[in-house]
Length: 163
Image (cartoon, rainbow, N blue to C red; front, side, top):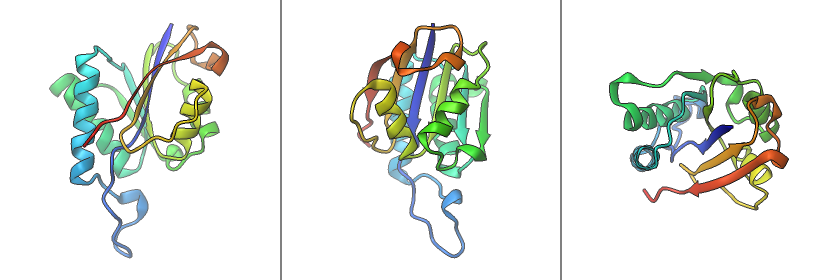
């Protein structure tokens, strides 16, 4: 059995063109609080990813790092920022999950909307728009990420931080 933690990055600061691109936007003060709340929620509920795959955008990397710090402190969790997940559609996020190393039993994805909302809705068989920092927790009745499919995936919980 596998556990998937699917998270939309926390609230981001506004871009200040032309000096800052969308990719380089960091978290807002509210976003930092949201990411900490998610990390504390995960720690309190013994939700422990063994690998985090996130978009390479500054706000997703920062979200992942704050969650990691709340979960583990200085030990950390292996994570992989990936530019290919930047504003990726749900199909691309799903492909990244399906390509994950089967040795990782508890995988966390931190990415962007609308891809995260669309994938959460497809896997959870619900209509749900993810606010910043939203975390969906899924159980996969398989030992291989490649088999991730709504038919064998169960939505356990949706957590929306109130920053």
